[in-house]
Structures are given as structure tokens and as C-alpha cells.
Length: 265
Ligand code: ATP
Ligand code: MG
Image: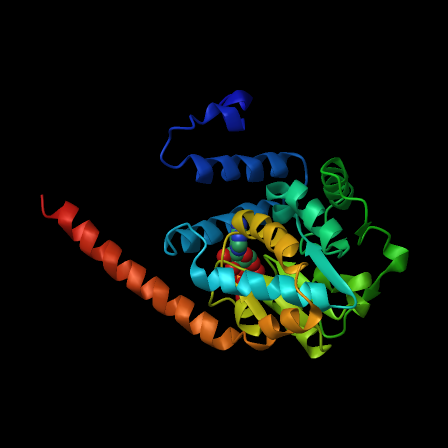
């Protein structure tokens, strides 16, 4: 395969899986630039699989969770958006915009440390317009108790009241919960430990979630504090996850019928 074939423009827009292939190439490019860890490719594949059985769209249940997440971030005193390699490769501009309009600082936090990775992610975020990026200076970091992975090293997250953790590892979600942080997870797998531990679980693809969050921030900023609080109070995360699982089961039943129609011939 030539390097040209790895470029986004080599995928014809008419290809039925254009969107999916476009983001695969972003992840591959990210890996070449040190932004994405090798294991990040596998994590992306796991995400794609769940996206597939959710119909590759933002469900109404995800929309509800996204709306609640934005409301919670607007009400927070010290919100932080945690950034890993996959997220930086997929939606850098959108993250920079969201960080500015909430406002909530971005903090780089990685499971797989590697020489030059933090620098590479910082560069991608800065190029995308982000101005406040933490998680770079090790002297400013402390270590979360009870956590062995590299994700234990945190800066502003240590003092945050609410942390948005897209594509997070379950161990750190658990550690952050034990420190009484409110957690917003973005995870396509509704059964992951992260999804089950979070306070607000957005079961949707990060590439659709962040643009929707930007849109909703502008909308919710027109409301008063009482109205924003009501959005958070009326949200039931457990019920939302249960309904999402029901939706997957229903979707698979429909797809099964469709597949049988094709297999008949
Ligand atoms: P946990 O540690 O929470 O139990 P896990 O070990 O199954 O989860 P990890 O590799 O730690 O999974 O985290 C990656 C998660 O991110 C997976 O659940 C995967 O489905 C999800 N994911 C991957 N790509 C995306 C994406 N583009 N948008 C949203 N979620 C994604
Ligand atoms: Mg994990």
C-alpha cells in the first residue's frame, strides 16, 4: 500500500462506508504521528463494532445524555475535559471549540506513555486552536491513589468537580469516582466499566458527540441556572443505559430479520 492510499481523499465519498473509513485513516495517521498508541487502533475497532449495532447514529437516548452532560459542565465550578490519543486524532478542532465555549480546560491523560506522545498531542490540539492544555508538565502533576496505570498522573483533574472522560479506562473511572468526582463518559460500549461507573454515560461515537455538545452549549447558555439544573435533575443514567441495551437488542432483531431475507435467496 502506498502512503497515498492512507490519505483521507483516497476514499471515494460515494463509498457506502466513507465516514467509517475516513475516521480509520485519521486513527492510522495519528498512530504514525505518535498521537495514537498501537492499542488505540484496537480500541477504535471495538468502538466501531458497538457503533455498528447502534445503527451508527446518535440515538435519542444518547441525545438526552449529551444534553445532560452539557448542562452539568455549564453548572460545574472546576470542569475538566480529559484527552487521550484517539480523541485528539479524531476531533481536535471540535475539542478546542468545546473547551473554549463551556469553558473547560483540556488535560492530556494517557494510558500508554511513550517518548514524544504528549508533545505530539499538544501540537495537534494547539494546531486545532486549543489554548489551555494541561497534563504536560510532570512537575505540576500528582498521582491518584489506588491506580497503577499511567493514567494515575493528573493535574487539574485532581481538583476538578466534574471530569469528561471520552474513551476512558475503567480503572481510572473507578478511581475518580472514589474521589467523588462527577464523571461524564463517552463510550460506545454501554457495558464497559467506564460506562457503568459514570454519572452521565453517553453511548455514542465521539465524532458525533462533540459537535452535538458544541451546538447544545450555545442553546443551553440561553437558559437560566434553574432551567439548566432541571435538565441534570431529570436525568436517570441507569435507566438510560438500560434503555440503550434494549435498543441494541431491538436493532439486532430487526437486522436479523433483514439478514434472513437476504440469506433466503
Ligand atoms: P473499560 O476499561 O471501561 O472496562 P474496555 O477495557 O473495554 O473498557 P478500553 O480500551 O479501556 O475498553 O476503552 C476504550 C473504549 O472506548 C471502548 O469501550 C470502546 O468501545 C470505546 N470507543 C472506541 N472508539 C470510540 C469512539 N470513537 N467513540 C466512543 N467510544 C469509543
Ligand atoms: Mg479498559
